Every structure is written in C-alpha cells, then in structure tokens.
Length: 176
Image (tube, rainbow, N blue to C red; front, top):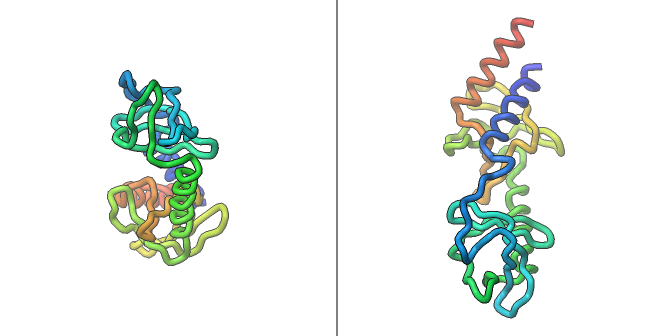
C-alpha cells in the first residue's frame, strides 16, 4: 500500500516536472510553427511543431525532437537542417535505445538535482523497485524513470521530495 501511494506521488511530481502542454515562446519571423524543415538537398525532414525559448520542436514522420534554433538556416520560407529525416530519426532512436538500456537492476538512480537516491533492485515492463540509500524499498512505475546516456537513471523528484513522500506514505500506512 505504501509503495502504491509513493508511486502516485512520484507520478504526479513527474507530470509537474515535465509540462504536458508546453508553452512556446513567440515565434521569430524566420522560425514559426508549421514551417517546413528540409535537408540541404531539399528533402523533407519535418515541420516545426512548436518553439520553446531557444529550441525548436520538429515533428518528423516518426518523432518529435527538440533541437536548438542554431541548428537551422532559414532559406526561402523553409528551414534547412544538416541531417536527412532518416538520419534524424535514427539518432532519436539510438538515443532512446541507449536511455532504455540504462533501465536495469543495479543502475544508480539520481534525483532531479543529480544526487543519488539509491539503485534499481528489480525492474519489469511496468514497475521498478528501488532500494533507497536509507535502506527502504519503493516501487515506482517504469514510466517515472528516465535512463541517461551515462548509465544512471533519473526520477522526477529531488532526494528530499522522495524521502518526504516515502515518510508520508509510511505515516499514512500506519494510520490505516
């Protein structure tokens, strides 16, 4: 029961940490939502799906990827990009596969500020059980974890927030 309560708290915190519908900055005249993105030979890479500060969200035929504005050159009402659609899709898939590969038992789990919170004790298609530095275990939805290229795994909470959630869940479980 305590683990389900903590999992719900972590899920809520992850949603709060990653905006569901990001607010995009006002588009510059050269880069606007709906602008076509092409490679140097004129091949379709994707379209601009949104703007977020100094980044451009590009939607390809398979993915949405956030890229720096400096990666594009405006030309004749379109944006030129240095990769083909196939190359961009392959890089996104390579990055995603590397992140998924980090989600294994024994991986170090860090909070939002990069501070270690524990390790993955076990993981399956839906859930991961973390062994916290305090010695306690908590089960979280796998979707609440993000693998990193360095082999670590990040959760959407700081160490303090996770410890507070575990403590609150322990208090709630003791009162039922």
